[in-house]
Image (cartoon, rainbow over all chains, first blue to last red; front, side, top):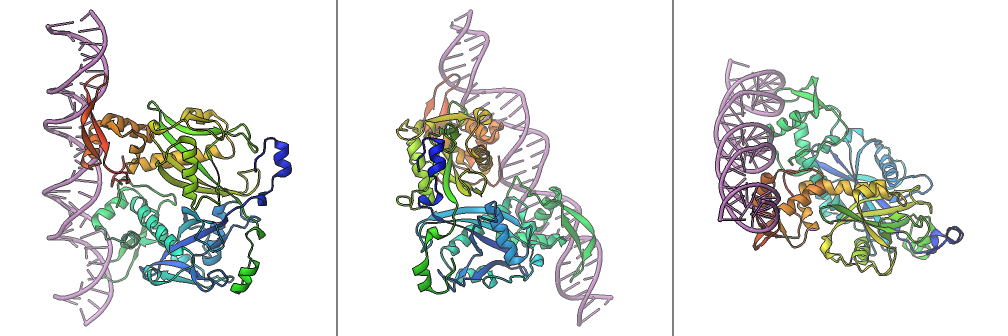
Amino acid sequence: MSYQTEKEFLIHYDPKAFDAPLVTVDLCIFTLIENDLKILMVKRSQFPEKGKLALPGGFIDLATDSTIEETALRKLLNKTGVKSPYLEQVATIGNKSRDPRGWSVTTLYFALIPYEDVIGANEVGDAVQWLSMEDVAISSMAFDHKELIKLARERLANKVSYTDIGFHVLPEKFTLTQLQQAFEILLDHKLEKKSFRRRMLSADLVKELDEVSAERGRPAALYAAKSKQPHFFTRSL
Amino acid sequence: MSYQTEKEFLIHYDPKAFDAPLVTVDLCIFTLIENDLKILMVKRSQFPEKGKLALPGGFIDLATDSTIEETALRKLLNKTGVKSPYLEQVATIGNKSRDPRGWSVTTLYFALIPYEDVIGANEVGDAVQWLSMEDVAISSMAFDHKELIKLARERLANKVSYTDIGFHVLPEKFTLTQLQQAFEILLDHKLEKKSFRRRMLSADLVKELDEVSAERGRPAALYAAKSKQPHFFTRSL
DNA sequence: ACTTTTATGTGGCTTTGCGCCACTATATCA
DNA sequence: TGATATAGTGGCGCAAAGCCACATAAAAGT
């Protein structure tokens, strides 16, 4: 694996000549279903870990994927039908013990999607299901996927506390109360109504629509997010 | 690569049977030399990209490294003699065009070290040099390493703005002015003296020593960091 | 010696924005 | 028509940031 001249390199270089770890991409796809935070999981239909719950993911397709982010988006589209999620790389975990097949590396992403956008078009592959965080806690999972979920969940809460990415679990139109509830669930703590509204409005993140949402009680004004680009608050929630 | 039974899996599984990308670890090691932010670079002695400047890094040693973080620490120790830096994973970049050898994945870390701790013990391998950010801007570099530096630099500035990791480029004892200067360089913007001191002192991050640093002007009190664990500010600098 | 220069460290006022919670507004339902 | 439910606001107190002049303490200049 040592080449002093270009000729030597070109002639002798063989990617399979040295040991390489397995490389995979895993996804933690979050959404809100009836004000409950859910994660998409699949049941593995193959060895190793056949029958166990696992995060959607798998190997990079070197022929069709040109970046690892593409791999992640492909898997996501595959399982949910969603094309443009909020997608963020969480971390890469690599060690010799996480996979029985030997040294393995996985790059973990998390995605936020509005449940309204999910199409139940999971034709191929393993059966999908949406697990609540309570289900996650009590379920047994393949590989180190429980730890991966913990990492993703922590990153999510952290990121929601100082950015506006929480918008991405909501449909296009929403009320400020729905927005606040979404943030509260993602953060896992309550927020003060006045402060929350003051911030969202003064940061100019939403535009008020000429529509109202009428449920019980006083109708609420509907809003839409102004930008898809994440906004960073100078102060955390 | 598809196994319906465990037996089938155990008999037929061969890690080299399917295409895998190259996997590397790269490091962006930051330090402060005379109030100037520097990055450690090496000159490649082998193909590909022989002769070009590159970030220290390389392949995971599957035999000796048990995690990728160990790989990163090994490389760092190797180049600087530093054993316990502040080390943080920035991102993993994987695509088919970044390395002439084909599909390749690299996990990028950044490290913060006090220059006082660096031992010029770079016996083996390529020649190291410390580049200032201006040098980085005008130098030609191997692979996509210039972009990797940009990523690391951005993450660094961002993280310094809401944590106290800036402490890690300073020696054990420092004055509050030195601390402020370090933060200013890492953030790339000026800070207000009174506010900065108020925050550092009220957050209880430092303890005052019974010593003073006498240069020009009034002698300054020396301080030491109280903890190695990063502290998160609720408000960014 | 004493004045100037240089740098450390603080006093104190203004401004900003969060926490709090009572109060008003507008709908449905009995 | 009044009870209930939810949306949305008024307004005060407080904590911390921004600002900048001033006091302090040493070295260097004359």
